[in-house]
Length: 119
Image (tube, rainbow, N blue to C red; front, side, top):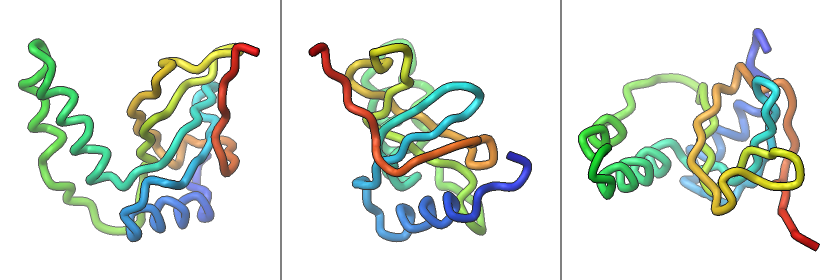
């Protein structure tokens, strides 16, 4: 998308203002389908920092995510947690991951996420 979807920007702004992580969303971006729950950017950054801190090889990168965001204006990115990239009948990773998606790159979306079942 050359211009971000205003409704999607409003959803992201609401997640940021409410500091809620209960909004489920599925987006199409760059040909990939990502499904999961949105988190406020600060919460997302903190969680990524915690994961990196616990890694013996990547801990030096954790401080990059704890640096304060200096951005003004409406949100430019969606911050997913417990998210999966849909690949055939499964989601990758199975347990969910942390993804940051540029709103302007979303070509389609729907409210809600997809669950997986082996049955």
